Length: 86
Image 1 (tube, helix red, strand yellow):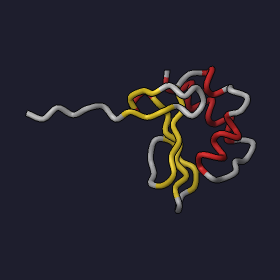
Image 2 (cartoon, one colour):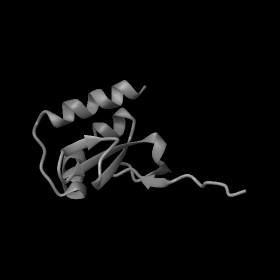
Image 3 (tube, helix red, strand yellow):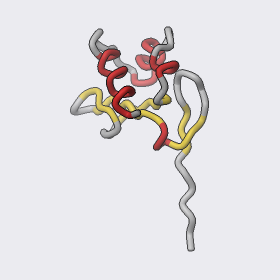
């Protein structure tokens, strides 16, 4: 019997590694734009904690990881997404 090992990803804010189920996936889909949890393309993972979401450098880290720029409303949506998880 083959055991599936968890898929480990790193938070771009705090640099802690965790199972990807415990992280919020943000994807820059080449057709649909920025998506949460789904999509094919460049992805970045963030811990589902307010500390990582409110990091002062998170905007620059996300822009660098996803190679795109964000509208100002994106970070409000990001905070709501993290609040809805818990």
